Image (cartoon, rainbow, N blue to C red; front, side):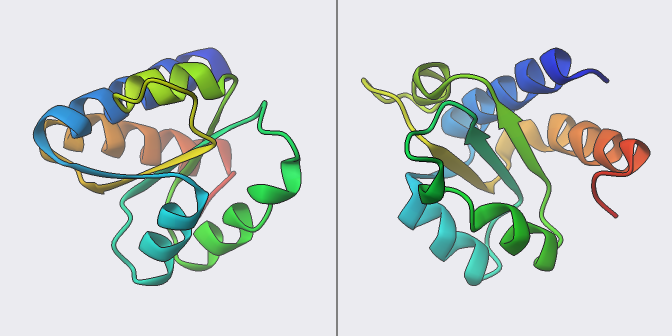
Length: 116
């Protein structure tokens, strides 16, 4: 699965989880969800500025063994999460109907060797 496909799947998972599951939006909420072990998937926007805001999420998600997908656009991520503006990070806390997509993403990350 290439980066573009991965990003599309991540947006789709966020949209499905918004409708049928539960999301945490924003870097602080995502960090808390990761630390408490609630997050099933983390989606982070590459165009976050300054990048320091989201830098801690990659090592934290590795430590907690939660898949992290980097998508190109904050605006698009915000839209997928149902927000009127962009979002730097979104955590899927309850998968709802996104469960299969999240599993696909997780498997793709394991195949790529980006996560164990």
